[in-house]
Length: 353
Image (cartoon, rainbow, N blue to C red; front, side):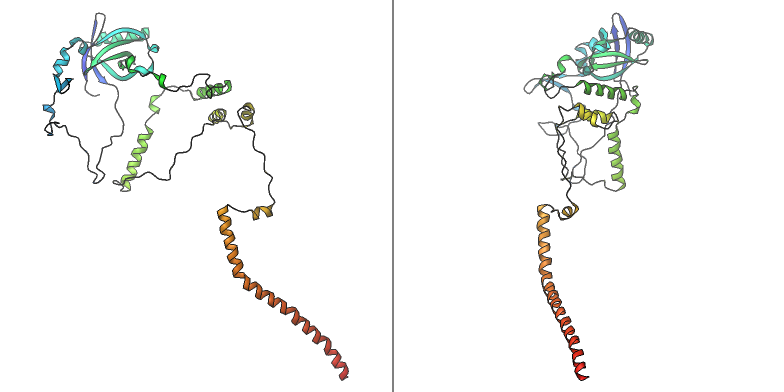
């Protein structure tokens, strides 16, 4: 566990519980550095004086509030503490409410609270009381230079403080185009609602946070390993020009999607139930004879190419066909002459006799 980031006390009524504040979460995001694409050198940022443009070290940096253009009031950490010593050192519980009364939208950042020196008994008293009554404590706490609204609740044997957003920090969704219950194009049928409820019921299970993890981060790290093995450490992958996003369609068959999600194939029943929404199927085209299928012309460009090829072949074969016809014409004449000679031969032999 990291070192405590705040020390103070929980206060409600006359009870005073010394506690230490610890961050309850850690960021597991990818730590990417900015590089100069020309030589892959890391990019750095300097703290510099805007008047002299010289770099300034941390020891020479102080905090100030600009009350007019170019005029500042210097505020040290001690000044910020003295402004309201009690607020900066206590988690002041203002009320106890039902946990379900606070929408999830208000929850911001969780912190662990551990008992400080000599605070074990009163810490356990507050923890067990919160569990018994089923309430959460709504409190004020100052962290750094901001006073936060906070909720105290129990997770196991630990008291957790969740900072909350103030009501004026929540944006009004009225500007968004949210469909009403009976809005045109957003009306939900009873059948769709029942199927969606069945899907939710089928996917319901016990909450086990350990089974969920950042699969995208794992995929990126695996890709990094592949690039290292392939020695592509300084290769910039550019987007493909041919990749185009698929065109969205506004026609959605919710019943078919829900049936598919439930492990059923969309069938005739869905079509019969949605006769009002579905268009009639197009008439079936009669199949052409095989001979016609073989002679069926392709696309216009292909027809042009095929016609040109046939003309070239025909022009090349024309002399050969002419020669073949002349040869065929001579053959019957030769046969006829042979037959005439054969007929006259017996007559000459008779005269000789």
